[in-house]
Image 1 (cartoon, rainbow, N blue to C red):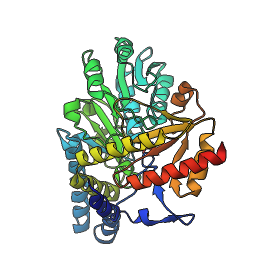
Image 2 (cartoon, rainbow, N blue to C red):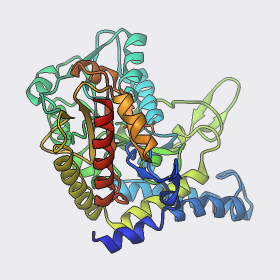
Image 3 (tube, rainbow, N blue to C red):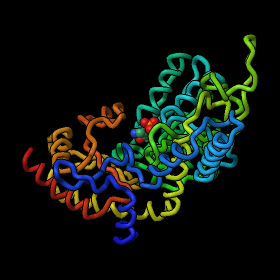
Image 4 (tube, helix red, strand yellow):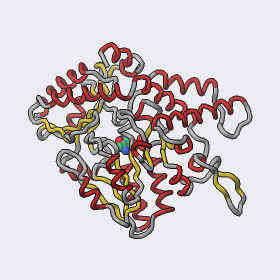
Length: 407
Ligand code: PMP
């Protein structure tokens, strides 16, 4: 994408013209959440102003159009992930809720004492804790795939960890700390050779990589709307129909039932069986708008441009004495974690903030990974397609200043 295209894109994101401490905002915290284009915010406003009514249950006009919008959003998510059937998409509050749903429902149906779940060393807490809770509940074991110095998973150890006790593998498509793009297609294939299902945490992948759940042959794939320019509080779980049919509902309530008596309840069909209560139909509709926005730009264009930013920033950061980039995998997304000399990441982040640059510091919700690396945390910058090389230059100058002050 050229400078004019980026300029046009930036104009879609009003927040990018905000001032922070009287400085131009440079927003490099996109892995935590992305900013929203005007069309997404306007979609929310339009829905509340013109088509708000509770969905599915109504016979009146507004309820019908709100229902249609929510179900069209489900089709949009299905198309975005290339799911085989729209019924394989369950709306959730986000990645975390989707993983908890699978850990609880799959755990209930298929796991027992002595079984094992495999995750990797570079997982976000959202892809650790739900499995740990399941392991505690059912007296099971969590097995961990290790990585090399570059932050790439060790696939031969992974293959050796799979055994007759393994019930499920759950790994991130892209690490939110290291930026590593894991070879998930290969990992799924290895697990499938033993008929073991795989969940992919796509929170950091969908905004940057073209995802095709059928080509990957993923059993479950989860993501959050707010990381792909959509609203907070909405996300999705893709699950193969055979798995979603085979596992029990996650929560009980309205809409997930077929019939209720005090003696017995029967459950609704997919996907409603997993959507208890009033769904976030405003959020789903706005998420569909965000996906449409991204598709208009084109994920391939986004990936190419963000890769350019990644290479440029990495090269410029390496000009700085004492720079240590944490995560140097051959296949990386636009996330750069770093440390400089012995400076504490929190101090770096705080001073960069005063210069208008939003970075993130700390464990990034991946404390076991940070412990494994033996570091106090990192400063993380993460790019979206609205970021520019000029912003990277400003960041480098600011970083040089800050490092001089703190050294
Ligand atoms: N997994 C990964 C890899 C993430 O980066 C995040 C968000 N930082 C999550 C899971 C959790 O996403 P959410 O908080 O939107 O549920």
